[in-house]
Length: 530
Image 1: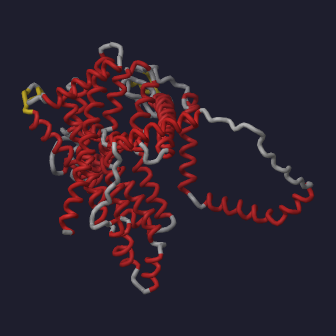
Image 2: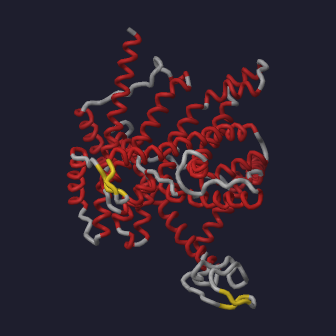
Image 3: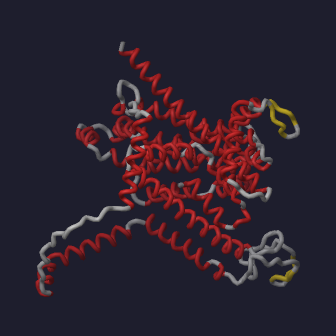
């Protein structure tokens, strides 16, 4: 009887998760069609008309579900829809799977080493993990290309294939680029969680019994941190989905990401929707698998061997919650002032300067010791000092970057004499061009400084917009916890998490019109990262 009840309980949980996943995918499909229609109107120079476009997107969604195309014309060939979509998705799913596997296999041991080491070694690993999180994927791919060529020229090692498809050496460089950010996040989470677990009571008890440190770390501590590690691996998949189009375009990997870029340009709405739904389904299935693995990873989370079931409210209860939330919001926006005189408090006692000096004398030494302690802590934290210097340097470039060079990024140089030699662009680094020029003779230093200012300004205002929107929604959801607004925000977060962010940003920019100015990019950065 107990096994039957557990089976029915598992069935209800699975059906609910599948229903929520289906609803999430339906919303993703509608947002994709709506964004592509707006992008098409923007490219054609037509007004957006969001209400009309929303209704048109709903009609297209119904047609997409009921009358799905049986074939697509791709590369001048009529290919069956299922064969085209599934074959390309298998290549991207395999690449993502290998990247997550590499991230787990390398990130977990790296985090263990970071937790066990002290001093310079731990600091170096921490800096490397921070660089792995903050380095853009295209820059990392370029560095791997340079490293690949350098190893071949200097050491004679066989080079890795720089581009192309194959389940062999072709897979290594794109998988490393996709795995870098999840690897760094897994390493950091493992280090922090393992350091915290090693100070708990059951670990100290094992140490008091004389159990070797390696045995304690592998048999007891690591089993306690598997839940946050696998959670980090599952959530970091969204960043891999965001960088998938860039990586596949860079390494010419014929998968979903590369095909999506071409399909968006060609405005093939059904094909784009197919690919985005498959990527969203892949993300949801990975998170669902990790969620059902929780009770087996950590026995403390078991409830009859199954995840707990959340309570569901009826439609009438949800409507009552909506009305109560709106009434509470109106009451807080227009509070009623209490009438009548408020009770007055007695005045605070006054003290002379000599009295305050006598009272604060014993704490002067304590403040000085606290100040020395803070200075020692700051001086002994190289990561904080390095990060502060880098942030101040970026702020300086953002504010005064163009003033650091007399050259103009728009001036083109032709044939000219430099250091007694006549040459043509591109010029190598010299006294005239400290960083050289590009192929048409523009000063690279001026291009970098002017471009860095624009990029950093966009990132800064986009960060502020994300912070404002995300914090506002989080405060509202947290204030009315477990209300319809809280559930709506959580559902929206689930939809956005399963959406490929880079592609969504491309669709938003095309829909708003890239010619409108920098505010379009700020809106896109905000909407994909709130």
